[in-house]
Amino acid sequence: MRHVIIGAGPAGLRAAETLRGEDKVASITLVSGEPGEPYARMAIPYILNRRIDEHGAHQRTSSGHLEALNVRYLNNKAIKVHASPTGGSVDLDDGSRLDYDRLLVATGSSPTLPPIAGTDLAGVVTCWTLEDARVIADKLKPGVRVVMVGAGFVAGVCMKSLVESGVKLSVIAGRAGQILRSMMTPIGSRMLQRWLESKGVNVITKGRIERIESGPRLVMDNQTLDADLIILATGVRSNISFLDGTGAEIDQGIVIDDRMRTTVPCIYAAGDVAQGRDFSTGEWVVHALQPTATEHGRIAAINMAGRDVPYRGSLSMNVLDTVGLISYTFGLWQGHEGGDVSEITDEDRNLYTRLCFDGDVLIGAIIIGHPGYVGAIRGLIQTRRSLGTWKNELLKNPHRIADAFVSLNES
Image 1: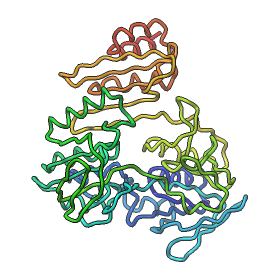
Image 2: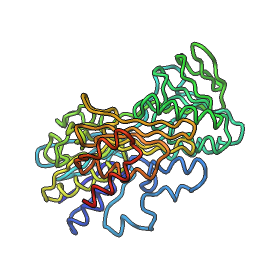
Image 3: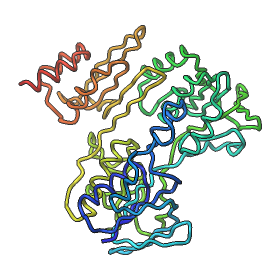
């Protein structure tokens, strides 16, 4: 059996390892679109603040890890996939071709650029790859003026390293005027914004970006910001263009079933590129989360090797360190139509708890500043445990969530 895996992020690497565990003799080729060893994108902030070097970002630090597994590793980009019901081939950017019986697409995402002029100018970068990290780290010195366009999760991940380096940081929240809008209620966003401002970050929530000029300089309709570095963190898109013509169905990402198969029987997909099952809703969505990607890769590999193992779905969970203030979002944190919500806020101490219910089942939560609650909340959501009388207690005081978890597991 010939297995080809395109993409060497968490999904692709875990798939290669799992495949070798399932089949000791199969041919396994792992293709990375970037140079060097497979690395963890989530390690980039630690490279920016020089807490680790590039070797420390490697997903597996032991020398010869893939060679020991007899996995062929190539640093090439996939240009075109050819497919039939029983197999196909992949054209690579060096003109070579890989034949496969089973193909896993785990190519993740690439940054999207805002639709404005000047994104290609010197001093304008994204914050997504090791090469981006090298460019940014070289600029980070006390007093350097950095403008970050975008205030979502990708921006949030990088902010701490930027602030700790002593730069003068401005963050453009965009038209919504709310930072971290995709993972936070307005209450939580305002709390995190106040926290950032207390750390010297200039958070800009009003105004429209018109263009970027040489300098670089960010021109808005209400002000102009001179900078030494402009970082674009305005979202990502799935890397899927090489699948054109294969018959694989594309929606938000690559459509898969609960065995991680696409609509082409010999092609599987995993990670940020795949539209997998959401644990909370049963719907098929893209979860750009490293734990999800890793589990996607494992389940895909097991099924590629011939076993029949369904994927029960991924729990949407984000953990973010916003310059020292930790926030967590779980599941359906927006709440459920007709469901109850319990919230408690302590702005002076930067504490916020929001619990969302469907009947007497906990389905979602947001936590700011309470790391001790994380295990209890995740456990109750993933087990869909009936809270019984504990629901009324939590509506009155959501801080008792750990007590509820312990009591329910003792009963």
